Image 1: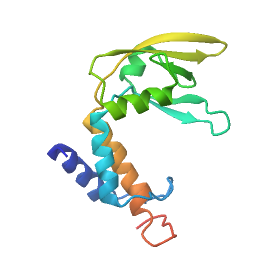
Image 2: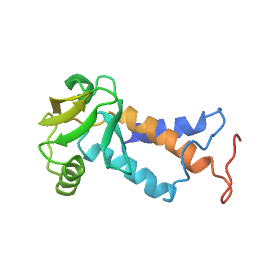
Image 3: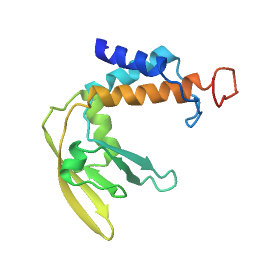
Image 4: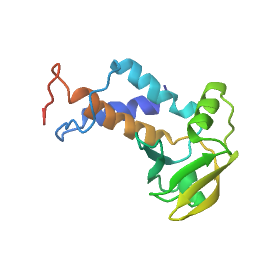
Length: 159
């Protein structure tokens, strides 16, 4: 873990004077394992969007696009339905890239999204996730999915 990440995480937790709300379910991982997983985000390709997977259909809808990230630059919009990445099912693409570590920063990946009633083909340039973004996500997760659950099975609105 880089020192700047650690400092940001510690500062986020230390100055969190707002109530901890359990807006996330309790994380099943011990805190040290959870932090380790977040720190490995820099080792994988970053596309700059979050998806919501429909449990009934398996559809992957773009929930949020990170401003100025690869997806935003390529023209991906919230609400788009992710059809393919690199010509394959998104789940297969991510599994192959993560397992093999086969990606390079700046590499272009063709994404096909369904927007309204038509398919749109976009070219995304893979990048590394900004450290500040990982630190923000980790800080929020620690507060909402770990520290908000101070007693077994019980959540607290504040502390």
